[in-house]
Image 1 (spheres, rainbow, N blue to C red):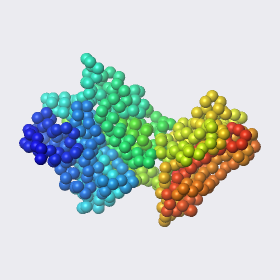
Image 2: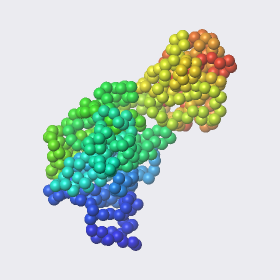
Image 3: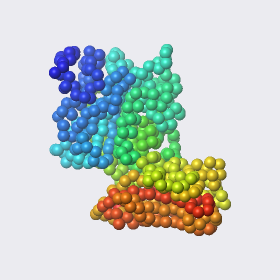
Image 4: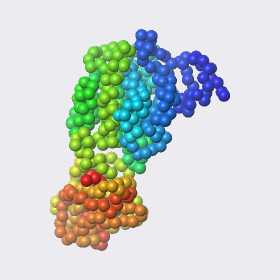
Length: 535
Ligand SMILES: [Zn+2]
């Protein structure tokens, strides 16, 4: 066995495992001063999570999401009853140390790791959580910054990463201003010398790219498996929810359902730890923050916890004495367990479980794996289905409605106007779009519910219209059809509720079809809020 000589002695290479990027370098890794020895340096954190992984091989897997600017491994733990297998369980992400000086945050991550692993098999509540969830933990996103911070006297108050900027400019990017949703707006700086420097471009920091790529890797069959997350920061004793980029409580890129759910989850967690729940922008405006991207792009219901202390000023507030670590991390255990428990159906907390936590729900605000022309047999020459914000058209009344039912996006035929009402409507045949697979339970009847609009001019015929088709095991069944007549019909959202009983216990896909056959006429259709619900 190859051996490496290190400052700690001789470590068999094999014992390092596949997750240590590069060699251990204790001679280079600074540690905490003796009075704060209860905190974990990067190397001590790595040793601890490796110990946890080896103590709990049945439920823990250690890997990484990538490397920092200086090549340190950014570690990732997966905690689940089947750590090597995807069971389709709801997933939850905890991360810490976007900001180097926020020393309490990796301790919070380690505390969660111990809570879940030590309690597994003995505490029924924790056992149930680990058995039914996939829990991801990134304990230190910015170890480069931490190492630099620890080389101060005793600390430097360093916040950013350690990536150089242009020659002669200050070092570092604020990782929590470098995410790619509305990057570059108010609440971040374009000045490399600033503590809140946003970076040269969205995702310019290797650490945020690693986080992005990991989160995107959890999109499976087009659907994001991570339902909720907490990103740990200090300080302020706050629980923040999206958005940070705007003061608006519910801008168009947030649905009313999600806004109520985020607020209720935050308030319930805050009641358990004595923090204050508020929208992120109520603290101050930020742009390029993690929560905005994870909600705005991936619809993960995420929270920033600003840990102890609530007050204080200057950099001392980032460096509480290590005697407080246990108290101030355990203080959040109930909130963490509560969020884990609600993550199979976050809408339960506002009483919307029956309507929104069935086998399928898509508000169509982000891409979730619908396929246009899945069979390659579509004949339409224009106005094919597109998910996005529909643009309004008007020809003797509204034809394509420029508003969605929820949020701002929908599935619409030719969502852009291209200059006139009849420039981008359905023409020349049929356009189809197919949902991802939906597994229907065998034991309970289910209903397909959606909102749709169909509009046409008085030149339409019954060869034009809108259909809903169930595709299952290679067969297609028309379950709803709205055929046009030779009248002028304006766009208007309508409710549809269809019985899926014939497919109990089967795997199905929902296919939306809009068609303009025969002589051309103006035909527009749109769909929003597709759900399969239980009774
Ligand atoms: Zn922070």
